[in-house]
Amino acid sequence: MSSHVATLLAPKSVGLRLFLLLAAAILAIAMAADAWRLRQERTRVLAQLEREASLVTESIEGQIALVMRAPDDGRLADFLEEIRQAKDADCVAAYALDGRRVHAAFAPGTTGRGPDVCPLRITPRPVAEALSAQWGLSGTYNIQVAMTPGGTPQGILKLVFDAARVSGALHQFRNSILVERALVLLAMGVMLWVGIAVSVTRPIRRLIAGVEEIARGNLKARIPSPADTEVGELARAFNRMAGRLDETQDQRRRAEESRAVLERQFRHAERLAAVGKLANVIAHEVGTPLHVIAGRARHLGRGLPKDDPRREDVESIREQVSRITRTMKHVLQSSRAIPVRREPVDLGQVVRDVAGIVSPEYAARSVDLRVSLPPLPTLHADADGLTQVLLNLLTNALAATPPGGRVEIAGTAVARDGRAGVALSIADNGTGIAPEHLERIFDPFFSTKRSDGTGLGLSICRDIVRAHEGDITVESTPGAGACFTLWLPAEPREATRA
Image 1 (cartoon, helix red, strand yellow):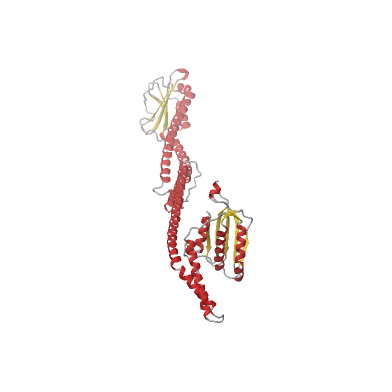
Image 2 (image 1 turned 90 degrees about the vertical axis):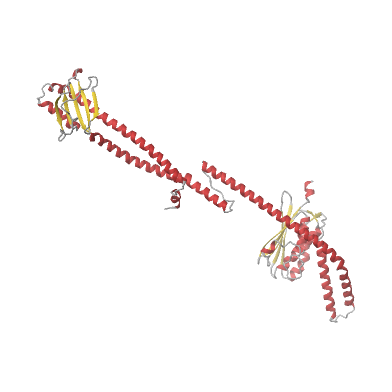
């Protein structure tokens, strides 16, 4: 049994209940119609018998009236027997007007059947009643016809038929009706079954499946509703409800994402405030001793011969002091607001200048640096700040790319939120960034470098880009490289509104 049939036959199935209800209604109507047809057929058969009896009487009444005057004449018996055989009657009898039987012709074996089968005397009917018919007590149907040759009553002709003569025709007619009705009901049942399955059961099952999908959290679930019916309208209403729920969930998700961004920005601001306090302490408490150490190291270096092994120790001291000084500079820079001096800037020229600066280092590492820039619109931006961002990104890309790899710089004009701007991408085919590090890559003091990294470079890049009202994002696949994308507006928002 297929799943569709099993579903339709389920005890709780609306389709099965509807099918049984409609089938019962159709069956009741069919039975009533068939009963009416059988009654009509019974009336027709009886009327036909009576009409035949009347016609027979009219055709022979003149001859019978003559021979009835001589009852012993054998011609009366012959007439009655011919009529009986012609009409397949149990008995045909001629009666006088006073109800006395003159002569009768019986079918073999019917003489003792009952008192109503051509009795010796009958109750005469009124003269105005030319024909009368009634059912007999012994399973017969009796017809009495007045013989009135020339308009003068002469006698009564009685024909008695076995009830089987009537019921046989009715049984045959009933059997034909039953066969016809069975075929019609079968065809209607199949059509009704298929119609309910297609129009009711299947759409309801789809509705149930859609509700179950919603219950599992799939708010993208939709139900096909091609039919312009109540079930189709219910499916469309369900789709509208699912769409609103999906939209509400998207709004809630966007609100949660915005809240998460605000929380990260708040934590970042707190971290920057702490860094600012720490930077002031470091500048005051550590800066002066570092300057003294650096000055003494330079003085010692000048007083030592070139081949003196102590010169290496002095140079090491100076390098570590310089490293500490650079770290302090980055910390101080990250704790302060990034000033932006806006002026017309050719971003393509800035990119080419920065590429020229880092080209020697790329060549020394055997890394191919490619620049692919179409003509770009002029930006109102801080050229120094953009140079610092590009230098930092290209330096990181070089560090992550093995010898023989490549770094590509590409750009194009891209509008966002109705504002003209430029999208600039820096992609490498190096080691990439682990997925768990992508969300923290721009956090201050977060670094994936094992040594020689402060974790402030990308944080400063993001702050510079945000100060330009732009955006910086990163995409990476471990082992396949990373791609940093900058979007910078052509003009600040105030200028755009003006």
